[in-house]
Length: 108
Image (cartoon, rainbow, N blue to C red; front, side):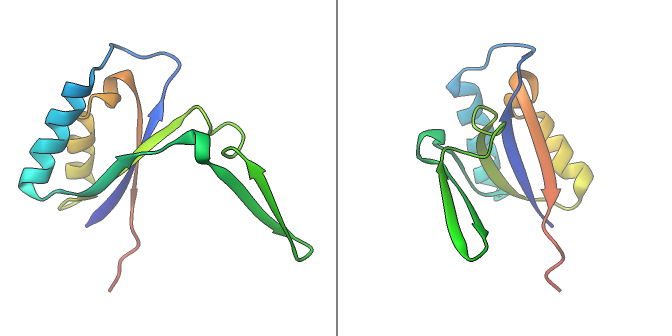
């Protein structure tokens, strides 16, 4: 099963995380083929888009409330939700931020 893992900031982190912690998590999952892709997102280039009454409305920046919370994402390949949660619990941002796990709909 594939899962989207959103990496989010948290105003009350448990412990500081450095990049080497994240790099080790990524390297481990990439080696095992369980991380299909992932990256950090740049909030500076974000745009919000809506279409209302046929008019395209574009606002610079992310959706309000998301700008300073959504940092990145990973797509995981796991046997089930429990395995996805176990993998997410090892991510350094589980201590320093928040992780949201969502399954992709069944493609079958």
